[in-house]
Image 1 (cartoon, rainbow, N blue to C red):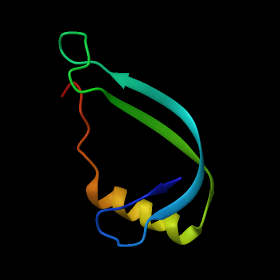
Image 2: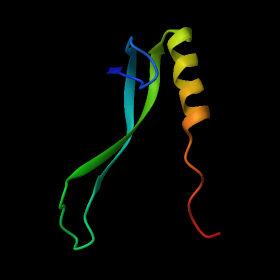
Image 3: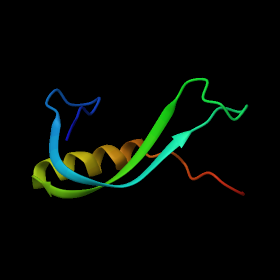
Length: 68
């Protein structure tokens, strides 16, 4: 798999296993703009690329949502 982080020119490359996938529906129950989300587990990744992903996630994390 290969992903491009906005703050780097070189993509991050790794081998991953899909562990979760969901399809998002619009408010009407039909996909107005079909979207999918996937969660992956790293199977093989260079430690430097792993550090880049973790650093990006740390500085770009969204606040928790839910009852507040």
